[in-house]
Image 1 (cartoon, rainbow, N blue to C red):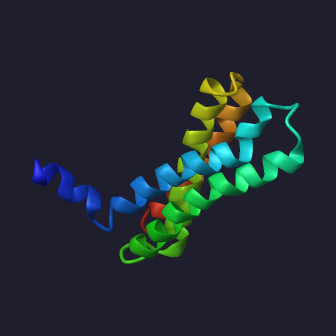
Image 2: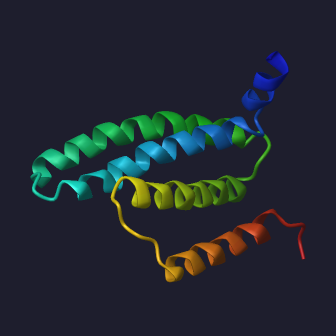
Image 3: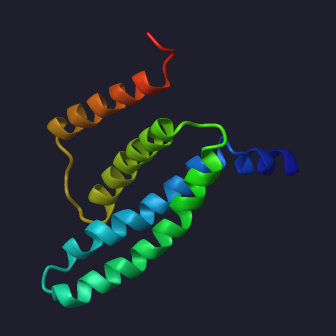
Length: 122
């Protein structure tokens, strides 16, 4: 069991896990209020800030730990790809909004950009 858990805490994988969790908080902070359009902004903003606090508690250590083995550009690329995956799931499951073929093409092009970030230099 220890061998299964240990790799998760390596500077290679732990940042990806932490960034994934932070993106769940970020997505709820930024977009969760859209499900409640009648809630006043004066209430929504501090709630979103409170949720975002937990995002930062995960994202900052993720980047600090990850920078031991990844460049800042690679960490940012991970974060953006993770954001798209988390947002797509959030949009479908929480907001009940469909993603169209245009969204899929746009996300795929961003994924293609990520491919080039992690590819050996041309």
